Every structure is written in structure tokens, then in C-alpha cells.
Amino acid sequence: MNTQGDNCEPHRPAHPGIFTMREAGKSDHHSAERCVDFPVSVVLPAGGTGERTGLQTPKQFCTFLGRPLISYTIQAFESVPWIQSIVVAVAKENMDLMMDVIQRFKHRKVRVVPGGSTRHRSICNGVLALGEEERPAVGRPKVVIIHDAVRPFVEEDFLCKIAMAAKEQGAAGAIRPLVSTVIATTSEGYLDHSLERAKYRASEMPQGFTYDVISQAYQRCSESDFEFGTECLHLALQYCGTNAKLIEGPPTLWKVTYKRDLAAAESIIKETLSRSACVITGGLAEAVNLADALRKAVSALDMELDVVPDLMGDNARCLLKEWNFIQVSVSDSCLSEVEAILVALEAENRALLHPVVVIWVHFSRTDELPVSERAPTAIMELASTAKHRNILIYGIQLKQSKHWERSVSRVAEIASALIRERSPALVGQLLQA
Image (tube, rainbow, N blue to C red; front, side, top):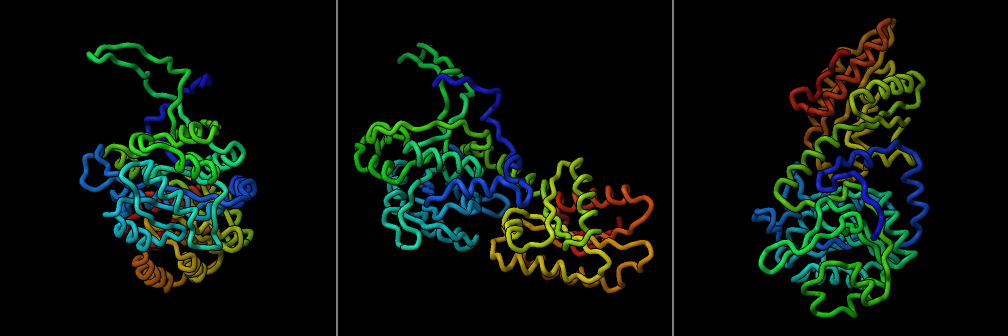
């Protein structure tokens, strides 16, 4: 491979917020959905022991923020609408643990199969399971995407590129620039020679194959391949004559390998949770104007806001995409609109794996009475009930005044702080902006 490298440092964890925060209704998601008009399934080999982490628990089952690593990876694929099923291959002794993860976090598209003694054996078991799919409505996929269970940050747009290239070429895989120069040593431990780094690339995941190519490759490969091989693209080339299309992947494709990587993943998840929110306006002009002003104000605070009139139709995707919601109410002191958000979250039946923040912004004109005396009690009662479902409700009261821009900036600061800190002490409070 003679392509030139870039200046990225793929060994450094990259923040996934660059691809998880899209404006509702924009074309990225819809273009991907239109181009992938064929069945795609995923195989996640998860039979490893995680020796390099130095932990007793295999790294794919290590928990941070109350959730095992593999669950984050599964959710990344489940959120892609054109992926029809996910097969997870785990060691037999971890089958019950994996089933518990699926049930506890309400994963919907997942099937668990026994893994093998090696990586290739686990992947092979997953591929065979797709060929013996028990659900007729799902059927055999056209393309199989193979991905590591310990690479939780994978973006839909890149999956689309892999799936499309795999369909056209038979095989496709992610690559990244090499971080360090590769050297060969003599048997005595001295330098023999080094490779010209610009000519080589690191093979990464995900990789995609047509079902026929990957299944035939495993049917034809040797016991030595099963025992010592690691590269699926090589099997496709050697046993099916399929030369894979190689696609430069984003720096977010890093793999959790060592104990410190778990801490990095946790830090990224925490930061991601605080960088976006969905603002619901009800379609009222005053609420829309306030939402637009808030969007400008929070951009200076490294946040992005989607603005939608409601959570119905195409806008309902925000319920799966976002962890934070801001309901703007105009001249209405009741909390029925916030209650509607809670109902929508419950109807979506998603596992609330992290605290979801819902902020009620009540906007009143200067000539109107302030929020009713019952509002603080009502929001406290609602927040108390919602907290049991891992939903944190806060309130902000905003009055229109001659210092309008300053007030909006204050709302943005309060909302950003509430989303970032998720303070249990302020749950149910009605704050003044």
C-alpha cells in the first residue's frame, strides 16, 4: 500500500462526539439508510480472556459507568437501522453472563453463540450461525461485518462505506496509518532491518464481506489458519481470490487493550453525554426563537443542540440518539410537556444506561404572572418518580426582560452545567435565570 499517511495519532483515543452529534433530520443518516438497501449482519467475536488488561474479568465484560464494555459496542450497531442482526460469539463459560447483559440492557438484535478456542474459530461460529438463522424474517445477510467487541466507538457513515465496498468487491476493511516504525530483529536480538512506514498501514476493524466469500473462506481454510491466523481479509484473498478494498478509517476505531484504555473509554463516554441535547419547542414561534438563541449561546460552551417541534415521526430518533432533553414551555406553568417526554422515553423501551437529563425551561413574558406556587412542588414530585428510572429532571424559569441576551446566556450556562454535572442535589429544583 503506497498511500501517504496523515498526521493523526491513532494510538490516542479520539473523541467520538465528532460523529455522534448530528442535527435531527439532516441527511447523513438518511443517505446511509438509502445506500444500504441490502441485508447486513454483524459478528462480534468476544471469546477473549483479556490477559493484557491484567484484570480477572475479560475486558469485554469490564464495567464502567454501570455498564459492560461489550454493551456499548452492541448499542453502537443496534442504533444503525439497516443492520438486521448481531451475533456475539463468547466463551462457553461466559454464555450466561452474556445473556444477562442482553436482558439487563434490553438489546434487541442480538443472538449469542459459543465461541471457539481461537479468534478465527469464534468468528467462524458466528458466520455459521448467520447461515442457520432461526428467524425466517431475518434470513441470510448479503454482507457480514466483523468487528471487535472491544471497539465501542464505531460510526454509521463508516459502516456504510465498509458495507457498500464489501458488496461491490466481496471484501473491505478499515486501515489506519502506522504509529511506529516496524522493525525486524535477528535471533540474537539485534536490529535486522526496518520497514518504510509510509508504504504500510495497520489493519483495523470493522471488516466487511459478502456472506458467500467469508463462509467459503472458513470452509476452505486450514487448521493452522484457525489456530494461528488473525487476519480475515487474508483468508478471503487466499481461499476465495477476493482482494479487499481498503478504506482509511477514522481515529475513533481504537481498541480497548489495556487497563488504561478502560479509563479512557469511560472519560470519553462521560464527556460525550454532556456535549449535545435535543430542544423541544412544541412548534410555538416564541419557543422556537428561544431555542435558536439557546443554540447560539451553547455553541460557545462546546455543546450542540438539535431543535425539533416534537418527538414524533422522524424526530423520534432523538429518543435513541440523545441523553439530554430541554423542553421549552411558553406561558404554561404545567409540566405536561415534560411528562410527555417521559412517556416517549418509556415507550421507546430503551435501557437508560446513564442518567438522562430533562430540563424544563419555562419562559414567561414580563406582563404575565410568574410560575404558579405549585410548580416547584410539582416538578419535585415528578423528578422524584423519574429518578428511579435514571432520569434527572431540572427546571429553569426565564422571564423576558430588556436584558434578553444576558438572560439567554444565563439559561445556557445553567443548562450546560446541569447536563455536565448531573447533580443529584439539584434534581427537581426550579432555578431562576
